[in-house]
Amino acid sequence: MDQRLLGRTGTLVSELCLGTMTFGAETGEDDAHAVLDRYVEAGGTFVDTADVYAGGASEEILGRWLAKRGASEDLVIATKGRFRTGPGPNDEGLSRPYLRRAIEASLRRLQVETIDLYQVHCWDPLTPLEETIGAMDELVAEGAIQYWGISNFTGWQLQRAVLLARQSGQAPPVTLQPQYNLLSREIEWELVPLCLDEGLGLLPWSPLGGGWLTGKYRRETAPTGETRLGEDPGRGVEAYDRRNTERTWRVVDTVRRIADDVGASMAQVALRWVTDRPGVSSTILGVRSVAQLEDNLGAAAVTLSPEQVAELDEVSAPPLPDYPYGFIAEQAASRSRTA
Image 1 (tube, rainbow, N blue to C red):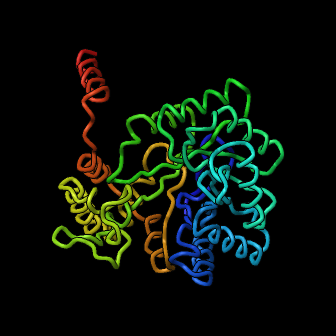
Image 2: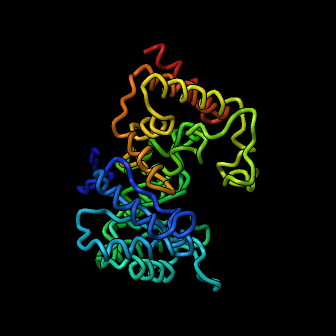
Image 3: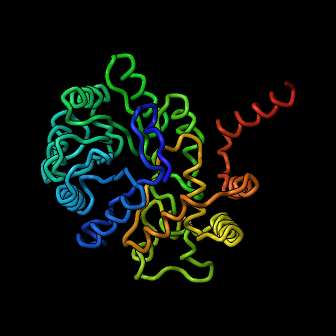
């Protein structure tokens, strides 16, 4: 598995990251440890979790595996904090006191002395960014965390965080963890150019679009209660009712055909596409079993031709909103024709 720089840092991570959201929920501890063992055996070096995954059980399961394994200097461990972890009014957010408590709790559950990458899990409308950035800078200086990153911010929010850190001489964020896949490319309008310009590494979550890009759903058959999407088909960013569009099915059909052409699974093609997008440091795999992991790991050996990439780009391109994106694109095209 190839290794890539984590944004504009000197730390290398494997191009496929193991996400652990299923640990303690859909995946029991023994199976989770088997997944971790196989991932490392395959050359994986980057593991991502969060304090709210399975109510903290994901971090605990990972922590017990790290303790059993011994030295973990060859691994990069990432976690996240922001969402509610207790009943009190200050048991969520990005304030300095909450972040300190959250990071201390994550360190205990993970059984490590430092967290390699700590990510703020979502924008907090109540806490001034200056407070959050100051807390991250202090925690980096103290060695509780090595780097910090951001997840689920808009373009202006991320740009403001980068500029505030730079202007104050404090540790800046080094990564962005966004939803990014063939069915969700809106981050390319502002967030991807921003990350390329500022040197932040992209860590795509949901690279398979909640299972859509694996071929598990069909035009003629809606999911039932046996699936995660079927349990509440109208809720969430990957909900069946939201994704059941003609554009989705065109993308799925194209991924299926290209997968047949290259002798790979649909998941492997979708993972290869997003992993090779500009600015991506590592793509986060969300698996429940060793069998799913094995298939996902196969993406490392897949090669897509320029023509196949162009076809996937074209069929999955989201329509630009008229203003300002469409207007700006028209003016840029006009400018290019006269150059």
